Amino acid sequence: MSDDAPRVAVFRPADERIDDAAALLESLGADPVADPMLAVEPTGAVPAAAPWVVLTSKTGVELAAEAGWAPGDATLAAIGPATAAAAREAGWAVDVVPDEYTSAGLVEALADRVDGERVEVARSDHGSDVLLEGLRAAGATVNETVLYHLTRPEAAGESAALAAAGDLDAAAFTSSLTVTHFLDAAEERGVRGGAIAGLADAVVGAIGPPTAETAAEHGIDVDVVPDDADFAALAEAVVEAATDGQGTTDAETTDDTSSSR
Image (cartoon, rainbow, N blue to C red; front, side, top):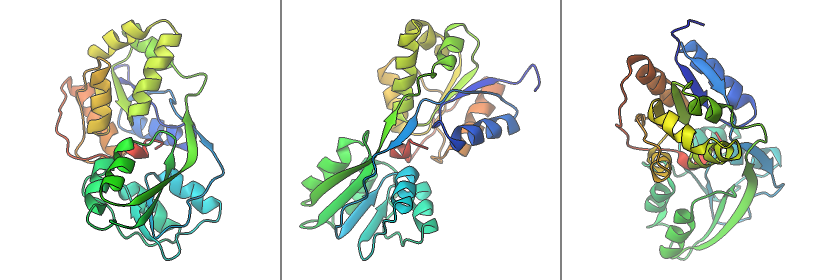
């Protein structure tokens, strides 16, 4: 790795995804700091039977499929392309993918179709209330099933210490929860203020507007939000900005609740 390679923190879940993310960053010419801020703990539950089923992450699809669940005759909605692709790989037909890959986007896509319907929402324990409240406001009877919990790994926080020391060039946040877990890890290490100050001198990327908004609420300025809401696009944009010393805030959509990515 070149001495000039930007040091980029990445926070994907503590499984093969963090390894894949680090490998991608390295292939882009970065020096990755793999600091998982999410761990997936399955509950063992599967989506309840309903005429409409909404899935909000690739992880949820995979856990449901591994448990032997299938949508049957239900109309299946997926929050974004990654979730839809995982569902199709499981052999399921996907009927609805919103134009905007957020909870609000799902509500907009389903609002005219679910009045009087029973809708099952299967997701993590950190799902947005926007989805449940929006569907209920549209006249649906909504049930939520928690397929998995998202926790913070005990060892998380190397990136916060590096940021506080001024030794981090960039950070790529893939969900609102990775932001809050980063700050919680920094707090535990006694470097929260320093870590936020360090990020001010680094390139900060967020996978979509909700993640960027969470960062801003906590005093973290976001420099990069890619047009395409997937990690590859985020990584490329962050490395380019860190290499050039310039950021961009051009953004449209996000599969933000698939943050367990």
